Image (cartoon, rainbow, N blue to C red; front, top):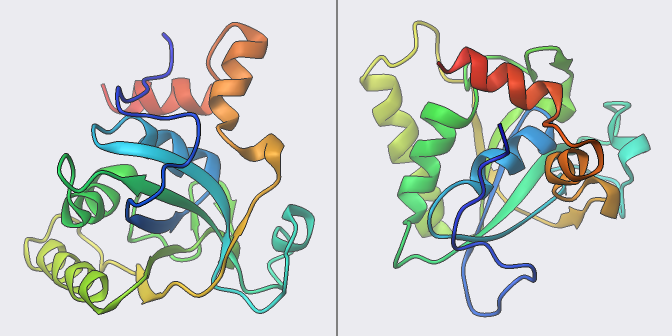
Length: 185
């Protein structure tokens, strides 16, 4: 049961393509979700939305830096639109109704957030969130914050594509990948 990777993925971040920033629990989980989508060219995990310069994983996990664990998604807008990425994030990639966490990952560093790069992304994200709420997809309110991106600090190398590295090293998917697949059956 190997991890699914999209056919458009590249090993290096391509120049000239837009990016989207999402936070929704552990960044390993978010990254693996987006890497399976057609049109996603590159991803990297890191930290966004906090006050500390050059945050580290150890500092962010304290919950005191204000950062969220996040994923930067570089995409080809001819294959997947920003709106489709936001819809995927809010409807399939995580539970946007859980305050400050996902499952067992609890704390402000695991909050649900969309971090926009410009006014167009802001308007799209707000409209999609409003539509998800109007459609009553969830029995509870969507708590995802939408705010300007600010600085995205790239996470440490060992966190990048963590689940893929884990599977290559251990010959089997990470337990979280297996549990998510079981849940989605």
